[in-house]
Amino acid sequence: MRTPEETVRAVAEGVCRIMRGGLTGAEEAAQFDELAACYAEETDVRHPFNPLGDTPLRSRTAVREHFAGGGGPTGVERYDVVDDRVYPTPDPEVVIFEFRYAGVVDGRAFTVPCIFVVRVRDGQIVESRDYVDHLAGARAFGRLPALAAALAAPQRAS
Image (tube, rainbow, N blue to C red; front, top):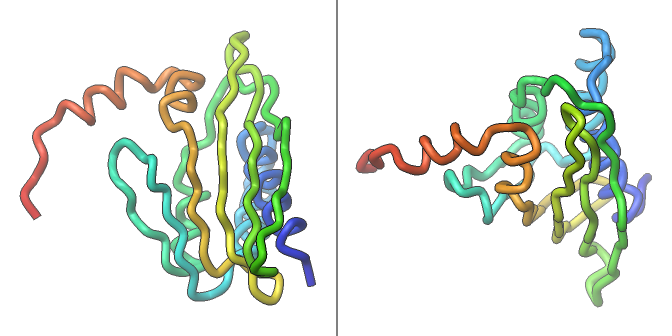
């Protein structure tokens, strides 16, 4: 069984493998499964800084769909976890994982700062708050115009 630190590191490294691309369809599907297996069947994953709103992921299936729904980026030359540090908390199930995704896309270097506050029970994530600089990610992958358009679009009433 993985420790909380091993679990959060496994998730970040799995994301890097997907983002680097170059996987066959079978390898990519296996990576999505491996990432999803880091989460409990019932989980609560949120992205509070998502500029388009936070849609909670409440199941392992939803987490897998989240990872698989990204539509693999192109032009990724490098995508790594750097400057990573795991901070323990008084609660042995909870760790704070501070790191940056760093890489090169289409010849341009980028970094995306992240802080994840994660509760791991029996080697699986049961709760996570993933604070990601979504604007840095959009900038890195040339998605700022699409993000700006989405933010400017009229909001629908709930």
